[in-house]
Length: 253
Image (cartoon, rainbow, N blue to C red; front, side, top):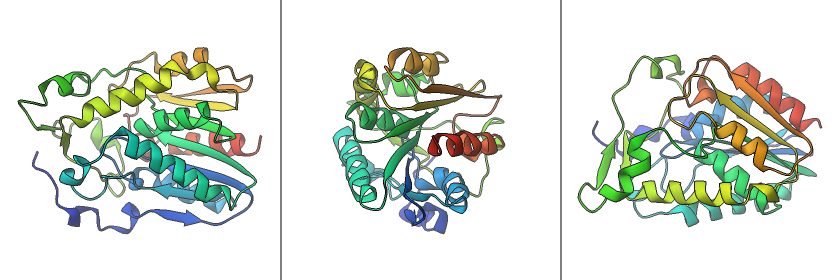
């Protein structure tokens, strides 16, 4: 698939947002090559329940793949830290929820003690996708990796919110792997409440990822939500209502 140009992301759902509500804050972080559109339905639903909700686009995302190539894992992590700092000023307590790589970032933020609760969603502790695991080795020879064409699983996602790159700069796969290693190495530092969400139909990440997180954290309050047979980007799938309800409980802890 060919790269999209920046106009592809001009839809309102692709723009960062901040819904001001009560003192319970929620930061939403999208995944690798994705955009805030993947978190928009979740954010809107929880904002309607009165929470203060922020959704961001990570550096190099929701513009062009050429922009992504100029960024690395440090930029994504620092942007997440900065978003926490901005939202802290509006909230008494702060929860971070992230999809895929955003879930990995949410774990790192919790390891650093920057948030009061974390909800990693489809967060990989390893990946099944060989493009992600080995693309870094191919970077000197193949500068770009294209995602596979749309298949049956992708058609289970809401197309109104499914905006992300059609591929990625090959070298950025090493940045994703770096974040995964960093998060996994320090899981025991997490003591805050944790909600881990994963689908039985997720063929992108290691099936043991959710259990690895739960076994690794030091939190006394840790819960698992298992979704049934929906794809990796479950925040725009038919299982979204279950994620909303579970996060609502976490926010009311």
